[in-house]
Amino acid sequence: METRVLPGQIVTSPRRCYLVKLADLTVNTYLDLLRHSVAGILIIVPSDFSDLSKELRDQIQELEQTMLEESTSVPVYFTVESEDILNVFETVKQSGDSLGPKSSALQSKPLKTFV
Image (cartoon, rainbow, N blue to C red; front, side, top):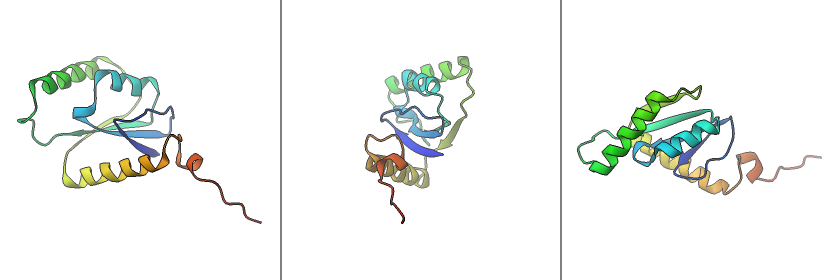
């Protein structure tokens, strides 16, 4: 599966997974991902919630309630934020940025012709 990070443009593809930090995931974004029937969602959860603002805590609670109420066939995974996960996030982000507006890596690079 191809992986992209959010925030960013959601491109419709049943072969695309999205990696997103919990703080960047809103109810609307989550529902958009479900509507686009993405292949999966990996949510990076902060290792420490003590520094989160009340506004962000409220956003997370609203998201949690929506996730409990919405049935979906899209797999949703959670992982705790760590240095390794943040490195993966940045690597995927840079790769996605290099693709530009194209919907896939194949579309972004010209194919070589072999004779």
